[in-house]
Length: 612
Image (tube, rainbow, N blue to C red; front, side, top):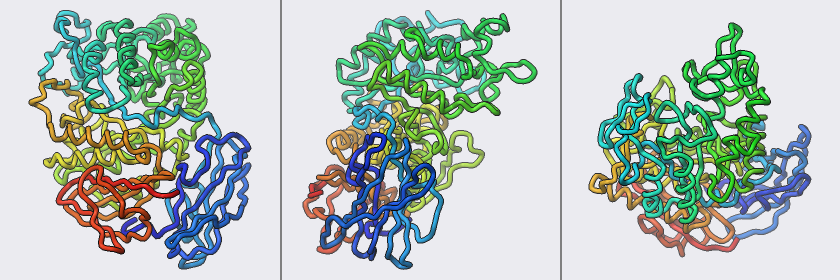
């Protein structure tokens, strides 16, 4: 997918093309297709699948300008998930399909069809969020608190704040710096200064590791972090400042010192015994073979009651009340409830969604997922996923340094370095596998506490980090920033990147921090960057240009990984002559064309108003 792309017919799931983002069962939804005149389209029909059978309805031309026509028709939401695409008469061969991956002159499977879903919509606030991920042990330690060496639990190896992170297998999870919840609360000014709106905390439950994904219990807050009172203080202060807060929940496994597990191992007749999975020999099943992480059995009614279904269960307890969380991110959600012949993943996701929404109706539920999430994100369970496959990996393949090629989350091969056309195609293909609403409520991220740091990923030139941040903060989805990315923290892989946050600003990349502030401000100021559709303008090896559009406003973004000049026809950029610069360079107009340029890695953003 390269070249100038605005001459192609277009549809996406945004409000400019779909009459409602929250249809009800049986509702007729108006859908529109934008058809440039050079596409030579004479008829448009929508093909939807109803009870497994395709049916067709004609679209009618509803408006026409000098450059394009708009066609409109109806899709009836007969099923909870209704897939549809368009068949167009005209073009080079007289026969074309338009689906989520674009225009095709041949028949193709339904996998990339557009989709409407009638499940309860995700919370409205989430689309306006910019998320900031904090690893509690490594962010900040409360002023005046004694050194961690004075209070470290028996499993821990205390470290001073400026000590290097250990990445040795026998010590990496035991090294404890002593960051705590009150320390996070004392640095909420940093989040406000940066401009983020949502704090996401990795686990805060008692455990025997620094990352706490091996929780011993889910109904308490680790005393090393300050305990339950510190948790409530932090949430109350975050809410007072207008910040929402997400927690991190592990539903796939727990720790081998967990109270349930200890009871189960002590007495195989105990009610807790069926909380865990056991193989044919009677040995417990562990996640990825890590013996300290026994895998949970979600066929157990008792487990569901203890984890989800009572006010004291962790899921409900930490959501409840005004000083409760505003949602959960679910760890390794793709593996939850799956082992050999058992697959109750969707049932768990739906049940957890019901519990979360019943406890706090406007709570957000996002699942960790690192590959094809087409089967797990239709909108009835998780509101969205961490979009590693459809955003992070494409971005890595475009922006990774020429001399640095990380392995992506366990892959035996290092990521390739590809041009912009391939990257845009990857984003399209993964974006098309789920409903637009699921895509919009998924986290976009350039990395996380589990991956290479973006500053290390891109190599020598810090300007490439700005390009990564530009994509992060202007593409569809909910952007998530890992603590310290905004100041240039480094890390070759996940554990190496979990370094303590340096609070001495002389150690920060001040220019990078300012660039993040500017891009976050642009996202918060411009509605199309939060709610608009996505239409590609131009792709080439070194440039990605795209539009984010709402009914009254268009934002155009140019991301360049190297010096480049892009010239595109102005025909399908109505109103561009009034564009103002938000970030970066001015547009150049020469009548029939618009030219955008970058002297090196850079981001430029322009906005203009228009009639719908």
